[in-house]
Structure formats: C-alpha cells, structure tokens
Length: 87
Image (tube, rainbow, N blue to C red; front, side, top):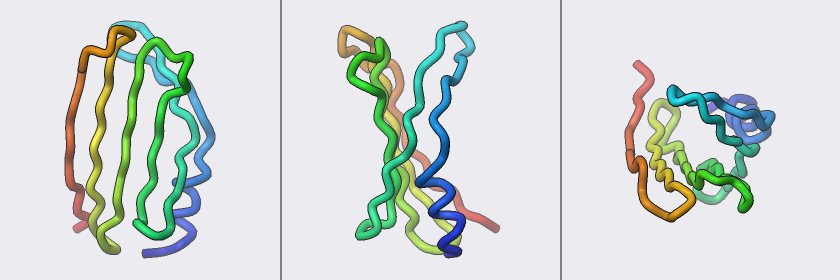
C-alpha cells in the first residue's frame, strides 16, 4: 500500500457532517496505528451523538471497517461493518 495514501487518511481535516435528519455530527481527525495498520475516529465527549469507527487495512487492496453510533442515552442507533476490496 502506498504510504502517502495512508498518511492522508490519518491526517484528514476534521469536519461536521450533515445527516439526512438535518442533524450534524463532528468527525474528528483519524488516529493512525502503525502496528495494526488501522485508523480510528471517535466523537468528542461533549457530542450528543457518540460514534466510533475503525478501519483496518488488511492488505494493499482490502480494508475492513466497523462503526457504532449511539444517541445521548447510550442506545445504539447504528452498528455496521463492511469489507471493501479494490478491483
């Protein structure tokens, strides 16, 4: 895998993403873990919607990700995982 592409992901700029319901959530810059070849994002503690996402780069063509989103009460709103393969 090209190291430049991984570093771009790890240092991506934070932004607020609008949702279909009109709410927004803050996506903090990702944190790169060189040992596991993974990048993770987590909502700040003050965010009304909690989210955690982690993507692991299995090889040069494959990444596997998991996401969990919870509301302010701690109820799970979304839990998903996927694997993407570059063809």
